[in-house]
Image (cartoon, rainbow, N blue to C red; front, side, top):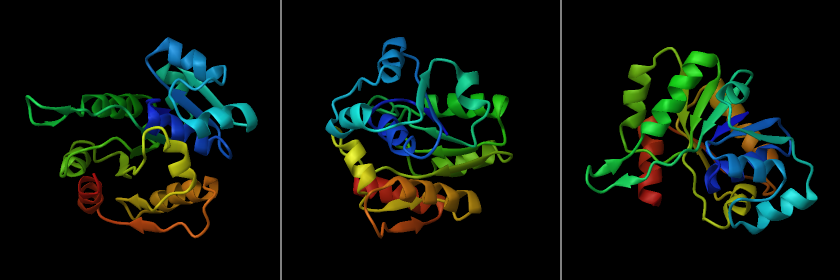
Length: 199
């Protein structure tokens, strides 16, 4: 599993999934990459710090897109999409950059967007990249408690009903500590709406 972006969403997912899967985290900041590889959390998150000390994690961080994407079965996008007040929309440029890199290096990989996106974004993306497998799975994480919220999720929502979506959901459930996790498979637009209204 490759994860693009190591903010609280990306890093918490990386740590969660690295309990059972090989995870490569990609970031553009060399300091952050070094900290992760030395098992020091670059963000304030009690559970991440504890996992880095006490848990065996199959996690490696890199600056290199080839290393991250070439052998990945799943690529999770967790890059920043901050709201642009001037343009009155989310800045989704980083998502497009990751998708283009994956299309060039490993078009067979399943792409899962975890970044916050506007309603209608997935329809545009799927029209632009019909050859790729792309889905949106909104996150419901609290900054500072992101790993805890992944370990004990309120629910898992995936805007796709494919076999690949079911496998991704199973990976998240397998790494959670909560039992009987509610998993909801929806359409793209419904998943986007759930995220908007949850916010």
